[in-house]
Amino acid sequence: MSKPPKDGSNKEHKDSDKSAIDNSAPDTKIVTAGRDPEWTGPVVNTPVWRASTHLYDNCADLADGVKRGGDEEFFYGRRGSPTQWSLAKAITEMESPETSGAYGTLLFPSGVAAINIALLSVLKPGDVLLMSDNSYDPSRGFANGLLKRMGIETRFFDPLIGSAIEELFCANTKAILMESPGSLTFEITDIPAICAVAKKHNIITLLDNTWATSYFYPALEKGIDISIIAATKYIVGHSDVMMGSLTTHEKYWLRLRKTARQLGQVVSPDDAYLAARGLRTMAARLKTHEQSALKIAHWLDKRDDVDKVLHPALPSCPGHKIWKRDYKGSSGLFSFIIKGDKKRAAHIIDNLNLYGIGFSWGGFESLALLVHPEQNRSATQWQEDGAVIRLQIGLEDCNDLIADLAQAMNKEMK
Ligand SMILES: *Cc1c(COP(=O)(O)O)cnc(C)c1O
Image 1 (cartoon, rainbow, N blue to C red):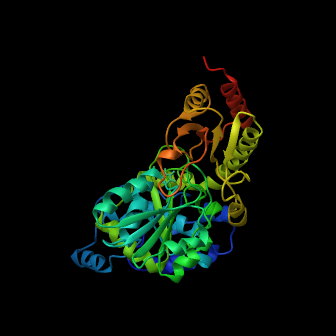
Image 2 (tube, rainbow, N blue to C red):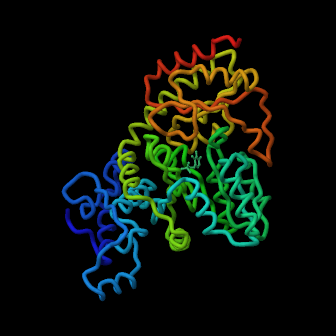
């Protein structure tokens, strides 16, 4: 393969590349982005550069490298190699830099690491963080654990609050973390409204955009400052790699990169290779996840034993109108509320044959999970009587998935 760049020339290269794909649609971008010929050489995918040590020609060459300390340039394994740079660049391109100002992407060994290091990068003792009440449980745990010990206070807010969030701002409010939709209860937040008032007060906005990804929701374009994705889910897509990413503007780039470097964050080239391979088919997979999940959600909605379907594309989901206004599509994860108690819900899940029982989602296979939203909120209260089942709809035949649900839901409890 051709020798990857060792000097600052890759920056120019990057810019010229960018203009070449400016106008392409997301489905084209997802195939072409980050496949820089200097990194791929004569093959299609950027190969795996498995290395800790990067060798220099001589001492002066090494000293130069230290001085530059740039991105996308060989230095030492912790700074990555073309395998990781190529994936990061592809994720940046997916955020439409030409219209959103997306500048760069950092990769982390998990989605949790990406969220928490983003928070650590922008907060300091004495600051107040606002966090959406439907946030992912480990995000709440970080707020109530390490952030609290550092003297950073977190106040939770109703995900449906919209621009009224302004009333919660105080002199020390520094950042807002949102998750839309929430990954258990699926409320859609009015992100443009919240970002607009946050900007007025110089408050940094962060979004956990794992459910939609930039494919269905280009977060930076909607006003978000730091867009975070648990790549473990749809980008990887095959339930075999843990990874997180964050994408941001030039304004926050150096601050975030510095914190990530200080904390020694690096993803393995093998994992980056698998994630990049997953990304190439993400559009095709998401469309199937979307169609099947919609069909199943509508089927559930018609059943007498279902109280409510919490799927952003259905009017029964809180924030549905905002989803309709802002999102380009819906993915394969949603919940429904079954009449009866958790025992009945567990009975249904245990009798499913095609749905695995386990955490995570975004892979090719279907999953079912009994969830407990009442345990994960403080600013709002969970009002529903029934038990909540979360489904990840995979790429199996949709009619088989419906038939499996039907037999499990129709089975009498002994
Ligand atoms: C899974 C998940 C994460 C965390 O990702 P990991 O890679 O598992 O650490 C963060 N946010 C949401 C919404 C998730 O579903």
